[in-house]
Length: 84
Image (tube, rainbow, N blue to C red):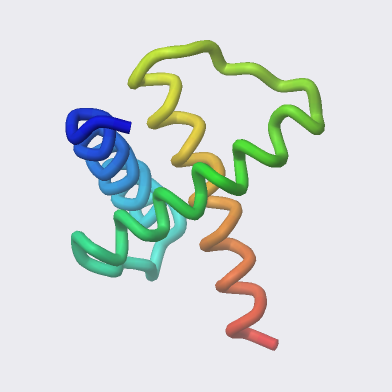
């Protein structure tokens, strides 16, 4: 993995985490936190989507959508656990 790939990976994670924070109100983790939430969300969606037979295509926009959906799932799970 080259430096360009790592930079794109971090940018996609940051955007996805930020979008997920907007969708799931009450969550904002700053730049680094959003990156972590977006990257973890991408891993969650990367595991969940193929198991369900869902494919969003390729490219940066599809990666952002993919990671955002996973990050929203992560934040909703965190919100449920915090309430319990």
